[in-house]
Figure 1 (cartoon, rainbow, N blue to C red):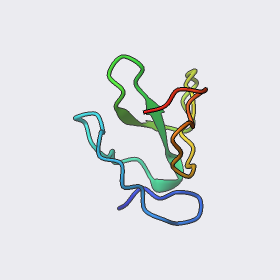
Figure 2: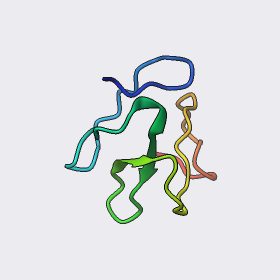
Figure 3: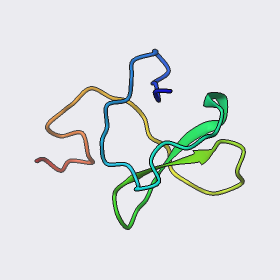
Figure 4: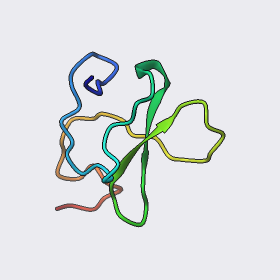
Length: 69
């Protein structure tokens, strides 16, 4: 299975935690960003945890609170 954005485009990000894709059903799979490593991790959408969200946006030079690359 391939993780997909809401518009059905595949997620091409490659900095996943070493656990990789999980065996959760696709409708149960959400993504959490690990603040200490910057890596993404598959988590259950039904888990009662406090995480930020990952959103798809167009690439921009100043898309991060005024910081530029």
